[in-house]
Image (cartoon, rainbow, N blue to C red; front, side, top):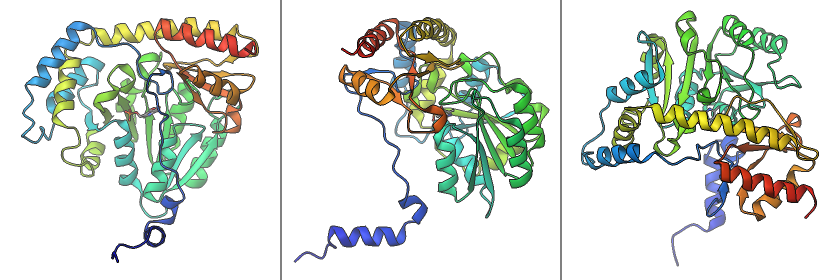
Length: 367
Ligand SMILES: Cc1ncc(COP(=O)(O)O)c(C=O)c1O
């Protein structure tokens, strides 16, 4: 006889010990993508240019993996500051993707009873992190055109006094950029920290980065994930140094590993390739938007990201049909009433986009 509890006992013990709000969650899942055209995760579809790949290979070959990484990662911060124009007087904190920074910021502000506010629909990790940290999550519906409902946001701020507000700028999954006036009004009215999450900054025409010093309660969040470096997991937060000093206490000491640090310094040394690829994605985005909008029954929403939100006649059927044709997009139909029959499609390479258009054309014609 084994002493091991049966599966049933273990499940009961786990359920009695783990916080019920976590047991009620489903784990974050990602669809299997082996051999598929992958247009579901807002990745940059282009490979590294040869010269950049050579620089990366050389840098990685030199990493002393027997040593802990540089705890301050100053070379990475310098490289980011130079590449992306971070104003020098501001503090910078690095994370294992911006996902980790969302977690750090949330746990720093999760006093008992504190609230997190975000428009809805927006990036799912905000709500999940509020649940993880035991914060009340206040979701304010977006207007029908996906803009911020300024009056409803200001009323919620007045009523709930949120310790933390997240605004994805541009927004995921809708793709649009909120009006800068609305964002500034929310920052001014907020008693708490406002995080302007600029994951898609490379594809947008506006940014709050140059305005961080204007507000004592603004933090801008960025990531290298959408500009060709999703695999190295590197996000960065920019805020007045007083914020960064406190948030840094919650960061795990070696959260950005030595390989990521070396890779970032090598990849950002000459960032022209990043701008070039972002520009190529923007022009493919314009071409794809026009072509998609010509398909019967398809409408495409305005976007300032590297993905397009499209309303289609039957999102479930088209999603399945594309998957059978080895093309993976994101079906967001069930996420929110405002997203009814919507697919979120990451802009791919010209060939990938052609394959998508051909498959959709066939599916919409009923073949
Ligand atoms: C708005 C927004 N913020 C943050 C992230 C997470 O990015 P990272 O890869 O840096 O964790 C995403 C990824 O989809 C996003 O859409």
